[in-house]
Image 1 (cartoon, rainbow over the protein chains, first blue to last red):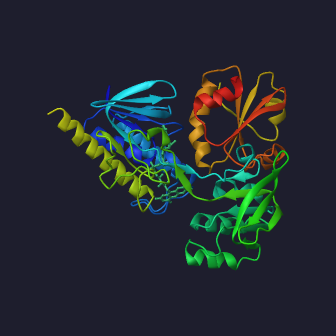
Image 2: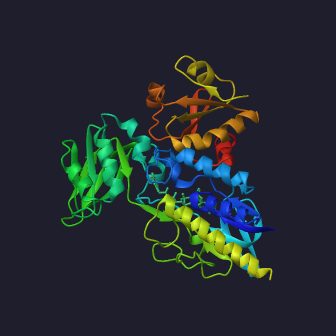
Image 3: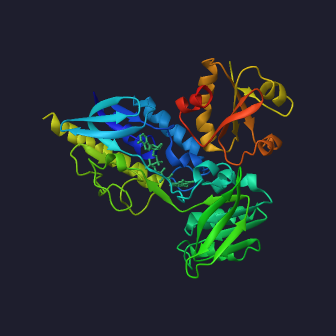
Amino acid sequence: MYDIIVIGGGPAGMTAAIYARRATKSVLVLEALTCGGQIINTPDIENYPVEAHISGFDFSNRVYEQAKGLGAEFAFEKAVDIKDEGSVKTVVTTKGSYQAKAVIIATGSENRKLGLEDEQRLTGRGVSYCATCDGNFYRNKVVAVVGGGNTALEDAQYLAGLAKQVYLIHRRDSFRGEETNAERLKACENVEIVYNSNVTRLISEKRLKAIEVTNKLTGEVRTIELNGLFVAIGRVPENMNFASVAELDEAGYIVAGEDCHTKTEGVFVAGDNRTKALRQLVTATADGAMAATEAVKYLNNMSL
Amino acid sequence: MAVITINSNNFKTEVLESKVPVLADFNATWCGPCRSMKPMLDQLAEENKGYKIVSIDVDDNSELAEEYDVSSIPCLVVFRDGEEVNRSVGLIPKDMINALVEG
Ligand SMILES: Cc1cc2nc3c(=O)[nH]c(=O)nc-3n(C[C@H](O)[C@H](O)[C@H](O)COP(=O)(O)OP(=O)(O)OC[C@H]3O[C@@H](n4cnc5c(N)ncnc54)[C@H](O)[C@@H]3O)c2cc1C
């Protein structure tokens, strides 16, 4: 039996483990993949205090070493359920189950998929969710970016410097992203912005060959031949497994305030999977600290 | 056994002509998820499973990346008797890596 089980070894979860260990509580972190979370995808972090530049991988590794050094235990298993038995919670994983007095859910978010047929099979065969990771494979080729937020605009800009031609498929007629990003993109000669349109079909043989794009206003269908499609339509939380212990909003985020409490006593939430206005490292780590502190308070009250 | 680094000179002998199955890890130094996966591949190699693990840097070996149609990394490709038999793209946990080869 652990004092605290943290589900998810991203920045929020590992920070929670650091705080819990410093309060001398026993901690198990359950991580489905490898520790680090989504930030390992970025080559350069420039907005986290103290380091002007650090890669996501190095950042993650250093937080991991810090948590481990303080005595946090790690198990590489995916949590699939939390059973609330009052003063004891059982966390069920793909390999077994663990018990703790308190649980912190820090499962972050993952890339939103288009939801089209063959999308999974074509991932890595023309479909990508990370322009900075995979852009290099498309030098002098034809690519499209789907999305209208800042990530999509930045991806399109980055790819415009590598690819022969870039299409940006956007479902609205204006951008939510930063004005300057959109203006810069419009000035690029090799970029065509396709407004009011959705990608409605992936056309492939062994790999992606073309996409079918449908204009929402006119119904017009256009086929664009290309080599690569970069999907940048946001991220989604994966909290469905925990819906019995925590309330979810329409988008699937766990409803909780700054104090990181869920509707279940002894179950807390931290990081990108919580309802909040800004999803960044600094807010994820702040949540980790808060959730752990509240969990420690809960444990200490329990033993009174 | 350690992970073997591949270049255009040893690809044929180490991968295509290998007597045992080969798990080829297409990666790059700047790719975070690739670096995250590396310790797991090192561990699997040390555990001396019945297969060989090789590392292929896509920047140093762009012709191999092109030939095997690698366009997202990390990309793991399993070869048996010189033929691709399985593939996985993106970060996956250690037991899933092993299952790619051992099924
Ligand atoms: C490409 C990219 C660049 C970014 N750049 C920046 C930046 O420069 N600055 C910045 O501040 N922020 C940046 N961010 C945002 C930042 O990465 C996130 O805000 C932060 O990682 C959120 O941390 P988290 O711990 O809440 O969630 P995550 O990082 O998503 O971590 C969640 C972890 O939980 C694991 N997990 C999920 N479900 C389960 C389960 N059921 N059981 C066990 N484990 C599970 C996941 O595998 C993952 O490791 C970037 C994000 C991306 C994608």
